[in-house]
Length: 390
Image 1 (cartoon, helix red, strand yellow):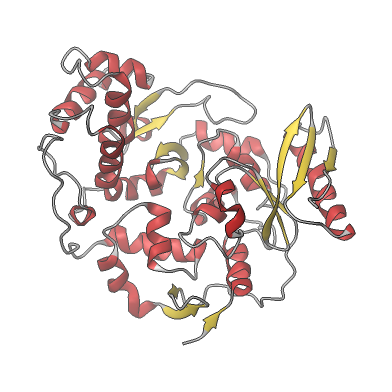
Image 2 (cartoon, rainbow, N blue to C red; image 1 turned 180 degrees about the vertical axis):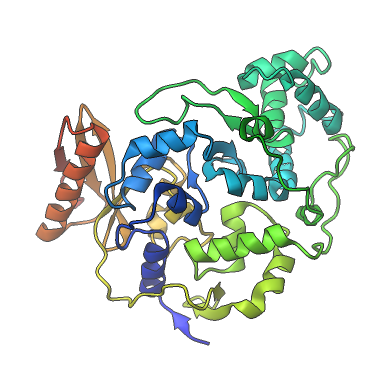
């Protein structure tokens, strides 16, 4: 079996993530190809797409949000993602059990004894009037029935797990601040999500109708067929491959995908990494020469290219792995995380994590100036590179 070194995996990741060459894909198609973008920080998808697309116009993404073609919602790993309307409708039911289990992992004690089906029904009844609500507002509306858990636990369970929700604009629009208000996904899009799959029981999640002080159901063999799971496998590999099953799970948070992987395995090719892990991939997906030059790229916090893997060594050194979960914005130099960056008063500042050559400093400063111009709508193109560490 062919062994793919770290540099080969790096170049494959950059190509799949549209970071090796800026793409001419339309914005909607790019969001779909990337399987959504991390969006905890409302402006992060704009920087992420600017680094990936030719002549990216941020107003196009804003229009897609207000036009209900893309949405902000809790999905992979229970984090807020910007995804296409078609994808969230197809994938949300497949994530339901995982979302419920992750909220329970944070609030199991507070929610002990709460029947989650009853809570979901109460939340839907409140939202049936069509009025957008904040998470605390929705929690307060049902707190009379469940006063003990507190608004945070009730609100998180309702908006991040039990009721498929979207965060309404102006939240997430270009250079616009807005509080978080929710409406049900189906009412916003005028379409229902796909029917619930039977496979998520393999995630070891509390089954519907039980109270939360009951033990989670034991892991079971994944149900087949699992078309949503199989689609997730193919889409993940197109955007992140070659990758191990552990990487797939780290990206989406779903434990019940072995059956889906097995179902599509004959479509795939296999490699090994330098640690001996099996990596799966689509046969015709790009795997560039490891010596392909990689341009400087500025990435937003929690970018897909880093958080999409369990083993992130293909793009970030172990010594700096904590940056990827701490919300640091990073700079790729020769395809790897080599600096962090900030912007203040229109000035982009890159702070190296290692010593830069003169040409590297020049390239980082040049891309930083372009980023400053983008983020300021052309009002500033100032950038600087701080001193390299000794």
